[in-house]
Amino acid sequence: MQLGERTHLNTVTHERQFRTLLLAVMVFLTGACAALQPPGTSGPVPSGPPYPATITGESQRTETGLLELNRILRRGGSGTSDEDYLQPVTATIRRLPGDLGGTLYLPKVGSNAEMNEEETREALRRFINDWRVLIGSNPSQLSLIERTDNPDRTKVALYEQRVFRYPLRGDFGKLQITFTGDRRLLNLTSSCIPDAERLQATLASLTPQLSAEDAVKTISEKGATYTDALGNKQTFKLSVGTELGAPQLVTYVLRARSGDDSLEVHIAWEVPVTNAPIKAVYLDAINGESI
Image 1: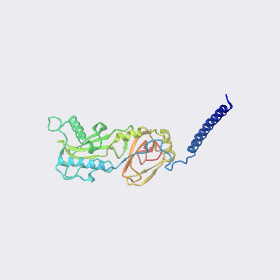
Image 2: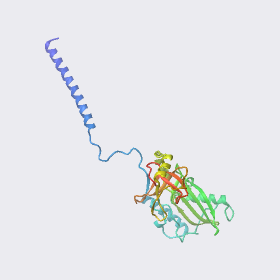
Image 3: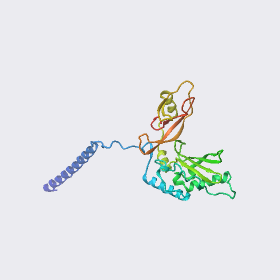
Image 4: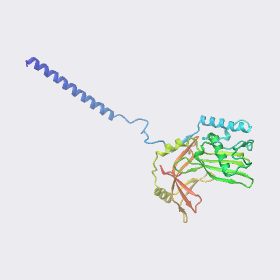
């Protein structure tokens, strides 16, 4: 090989080595800069769904509720609907207008003038299916927990919504239908939770962080806070003769404590209490707070 060729080859080799070294340095500096980036101003990204799960008041839900109420009013020959007849947030029916009671009828089942119990339950099921939007639940999600015949010959059917993994507690998830033996509808009120399947899907991904033993220990040592019938905050502490029962996981729904137009859905431990001014204590199974 000639001297000039050897010199040219060495020059090319050196250039390639330099480029390789330069590329390695650039990769290193890029990685280092990325590692030294300041944390985002929005804070850490949550690792799970927001908790507690919430249901907020929506104008579309209210408008749909009013349309359904108008439908039931027209069938009874009454006037226009009003939001006062709907529950806040859920937009399910709160009560029938006073001039409407007795002008609506349950579906007729059977051939006799007055339906027997089996026919009555089928008529109620058909009625619920027909008005499921205003009620906020499908018949398949509702269980009849009480059927009462009153001395004044009125009848009451009380249903409980059962769509969550754990039993529902709080002032929600109930449907009450008041009617007469000749099928006249006297009143209708529902505190059911619309779109409950979506809420259950959110809750299903959560794992309780508080064990049953932890719940009992917390109540035994610290007591619990609750709101009495007059709306006053009270503190409950164990005393002589007071006993705690076996805890049970439940789904607890309450109005948002922030005052927003929304409901909170919690997974909680229900701990029965005997010989006390309250019947049960509820502790959030995710964050341990007293509900």
